[in-house]
Each structure stands twice: as C-alpha cells, then as structure tokens.
Length: 356
Length: 69
Image 1 (cartoon, each protein chain N blue to C red):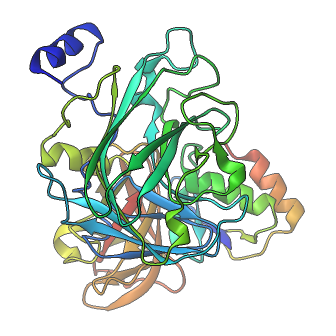
Image 2: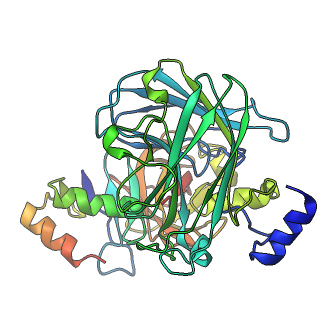
C-alpha cells in the first residue's frame, strides 16, 4: 500500500493511528507468564502462551508453544506452536490459537448493525507444512462465525497474509468488558467446526473447510507474528506501539507483582500487617493498571511456590489466599490454617488474572 | 473444590471463593471468567465449602449460587 493510500484510509475510514490494531501483543513480544519458556498444551484446558494469546485443544493431540526469536524482517519475535503429539481430529475436536478482544475495543465497529464496518486481518505466518490454513472471527456466543483461509506456499518461510472481512450486520456483538470479537487460528479443527471460507454463518465455525491440520503431524511447526486487526479494507503497516504501552495493555488482563511472582517479594510484591485474630493480614496491593474485571489472584512465596506467602522472620511456605479484590487493588491475605505471628510482616508476590 | 473466603473486619458475607486445587482467590465479579467457571462447576456438582470448611449439600450450594451476582 502506498503512503498516499494509507493517509487516505486514515482520513476516510476513521482509522486511528493511536490504536488502529485491535489485537494486543500482535508482535508477540510481551510474555509475562513464561518469559520465553516453552509451555505444554494438552487436553481440555486453555493455556496462555505469550500475553493475550491462548491455545485450546481437547483431542488426543498435544502442542508446545513459546515466544520465538525467529521472525520476519521488522519483527524480533513470533509465537511458535509445535505439534508434540500428532493425532487425527475427531469431528468435534478443537485445536485453536486465539485472542479474545474486549468489547470496549471493538464497539466502534458497529457489528450486529446495518452500519457494521469492514475490517482487515493481517499477519506473518510460517509453517513446516504447506497448503490451505485458516481460522475464524467469532462473537462471544460463538453463534456468528466468519471462517477464513489462506495458503502457505513455501515450507519454513515467512509469508504475509491479509484477510478482509465485511462487518457482520447480524448477531449479538458485545461492546462492554466482555469478549467483543474472537480471532482464532485453526490448528486442527474437527469437521463439525469447519465452514465455508469468506462468508458469515450462524454457526460455531472455527476454521475453513479444507484447512491443513497442524495437529495431525508430530513435530509440525507454525510461527505467527505481526497480527493486526484494523478498520478498513486494506492492510496497513503494523501498528508498533511503545513497549511500555503494549505491556500496560496486556496488564489489563494479566499482571505480575514483579518481573516474576517470586522475585524478592520484599520489593516488588505485597506486604501486609497481621490482624489481631492472626488468621489475616491487611495491606493494599494496587494493580499497575485498572484490570478488566476484579482479577483472580494467586500468591507466591520467595521460592515461587503458588498459593504460599512468607512471614518475614518466621517462615515461608505458608498457605494463603487473597480477598477484598476489586479492579484496582486487593487488601487481604487469608491464612488457610493456623495463625500468623503478630509483629512480623507478611510478604508475597502475586499474579492477577482477568483474562477474557 | 471450592471454599468461601473468610470474612474480614468490614464484611458480612464472603466476597470471593478459593479454588482449593489452584490455591487462588476468585472474586465474585460476573465479568471474571474464573467466577463464571466456578458457578458452572458448583451447579454441576463440584464441592463447595463454607468459610469454616463445612461441605455444603448440593441443595445448599445451589441456593448459594443463585444468590450470587
């Protein structure tokens, strides 16, 4: 796209240079949970990889995923997904890489109305396999779906893909702090979850008919980066936001008390004063940014043990949980059993999760 | 398996629940997806304890869930 065309699009379609990409962490740089380490994905639960990106599978296949430094020119990271156990997908099996976009960040698209705006999804992708791959855009109820497909022509080579989608004029698309749009990439959907590419359907379609199943080949790889969802019918250059801005955007959904939950809890974590009853400690733990919802909180002691806190000068490894949780802070540490010793501070690192 | 969080000094009822398997605290916020899962699982038969550790009957648990936001 020429510069003139880009400028024309900014002027004519309401694209904002401040937040044109509705995908957060599309360049896969932020990885608060794993710091580049590989995670395993098996059977029936959602596993977050780099920030905002999750993988779900419910079949007998298995994957690993991690932030990679293999990336196309202009990027320093991608998300690498590897099939560690290949298996055939049953008709209702789901293997998907996805990001759920908050409704507040898609409200202006007017989806579900006659004024629905066209969007364009663009990304860089590389795989050890070639052929048709795909994915889908869906609403939160997963009863409106737009399957899309793209072709990977050369193995182990990054290719740039763009998908333009006329906005959905039907269905219910939430515009609050719930899921607005789900962007899914098909890693090996069962046949009941595949639909015709390039058309809206009132069905739960998570990929396009004919998609290659990454999940079917052990050691198959998929790299993805530069993912952008923007208003308009043409893909524009990737919306590089400052690292601190991107991190803060991620922290609305998940945050650590420090660079890891167990890092020197005295400095980066939470500190509380023991209440006379001895079973509770109080202290304000303020989140770095206001979270999407009141988050789920897990304490960590100085060894990194989950669900544990440290009473300085007394003992570590004390089982405890948080309470008094709002979108902005929490204020209570409840000891699971026994009592704290009065006069000694209670310390903990923590994670706060408000993922969609 | 879940357990209601103990009350603190200014509360008359619990504001969160503890997931005893993950040892995390889940606030009673309808937008929290873990909270949504908690309600579904308890209604489907997952064990719920009161703040003192007493296991609720399924009927008690169902009634409790119905009162939540």
